[in-house]
Length: 114
Image 1 (tube, rainbow, N blue to C red):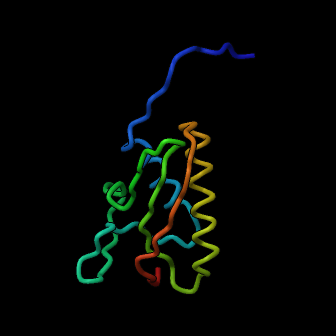
Image 2 (cartoon, rainbow, N blue to C red):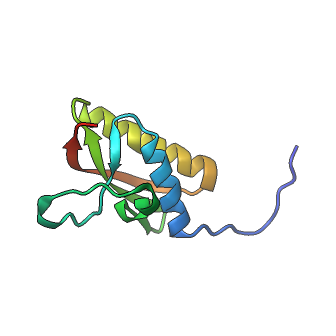
Image 3 (cartoon, rainbow, N blue to C red):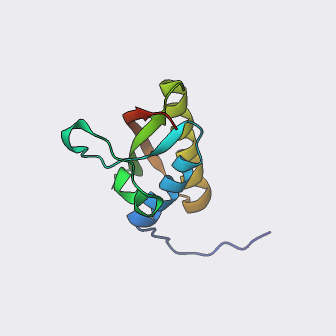
């Protein structure tokens, strides 16, 4: 049995965004992340090194709110992929960072053939 250590743990929003980004890329049907402000309605895929730009982590009173801006694979069910993505992100944040989550919102910016 492990001993409990008193104190508080603070995890930076950038670290949380990294956890979310890697969880998102492991999710079936997600082609990649895109910047939230897609100029001219054109969503450009972000390289893996800049995943954070496609994720917004907002601290709230009860926990954190996560917005993901994603590109989904053509031919997949958008609702199912979005729900799986939300579940995977919640699991990753609970498992690795132990932070309370108020909401995970998936914004599908584009659909692409992989």
